[in-house]
Length: 627
Image 1: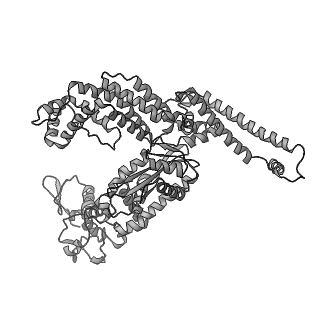
Image 2: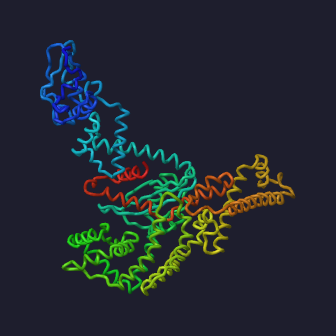
Image 3: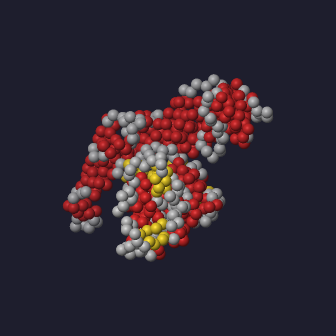
């Protein structure tokens, strides 16, 4: 080899400059050069893979020899991430078998041209996850931009066609995910359900069902099904659809409660037709309470009308919006926009008023500098708004608290209803309008939510929450009733366990005692049977009372603690109480989980997704929520 000849193949693509840099012959990018070629090699592998790897396959020789030219035509026929390909790449071929151009596949030799089935499957699954997680249209695999991006990430991967994605890959991943969930549900004894009916942009009605249960001491929520709901939405039709979904998932005998909004049709479907305990969504109920209270305070209507007009002006006038932003910048304040009240959005009136008060000063200046300003609020109006915010904040706090899927919420209902009543009674307002709103809220809350404390299911859940026990109740009689109801259910569990674990001899004797045959009857039969039943009942009662006493004597848990942590720790000491805690603490206080689904699923119904079938929509929503 002649002295000074560069050995590395990378020098076929780079030239040294006088300023101790090197330039790429293909893209003209410059690099600092310190004597090594690692960074240059990485550049070729990343940006010009075809040209570089072809030389790697057919190594060069230092002796003079015939050369073969890799023509531009053949090179351009291969996919490449680089726009610039060397026109005349000369590679030595002496003593080397030249690989035909047709075999120069992407990224080198034929042996390197295919991904393994496992790798293709992994990328396919990642693609489906992207589509379902972000609610992308299935047609994304046909988009030129996506195909270019995919090729840049992994040139050896060819995305599936829309048809294959729709009829093969998506259903396959859906089946795998449902199989996994079914195995979990089979091991669960008690399930509660939230459900909601929603309408897509294409004017189709759907019903979504979400299951809530405690599995291995962890509260879980899983969307089960989203079905199209054709025809009239009567209680009977809704019950048939819900019943079919429950049967499909084999949970009809496990459901202890269904939570939904206050619609008469869905309440009828659950309570009358399916005969399952129905819990009205407390967040929805509270929103109705607030809306009614605001409407019923006549003196407040004019002020709210001015607020809405003011917000509407700034929402639709770019000039006004720019003026507000400019004033905020001059005053050194954050750029905050007005918030519009939306009837269907909970507590949106509160958020509108809260934002107006928050930007009061820059808003005053901005309005004063408008050529055609909207009617503004006077000093008395601002005092009323301030009072309204104090009063309505309690309802907003409760809605946020109850909207979680990560911790039990049904056990919070009784304590927080008492809590909001106490907080409202002690809220200080300075205007008559504020006082009227406060009294109206207190009255309506008592009418709509006051009965929760006497509900067996809700009372049991509160009693079984170690943060509250009997102290979570506002009425001592209701607390005692909750204790009695839980005690009775424990006795029932113990009795069933006693019967199932009775010795074969006792069972035989019992069977004989129950036979009408005169051979087995004697003068003591009636007495023995009575004593046996009383003994079993007495033992169950005693055990239940002792267990309840042990539970109540344990210190209350801190309010910010997860009650399931307590029950995980005490499930061996209090097994029957643990079973009841798992049963009742899985009930959510709101139907928010199912309502969140249609908030997100609305993205699936625009024009690009209008061809999405109800079956595919169900699969995508399921995978979005469960994977």
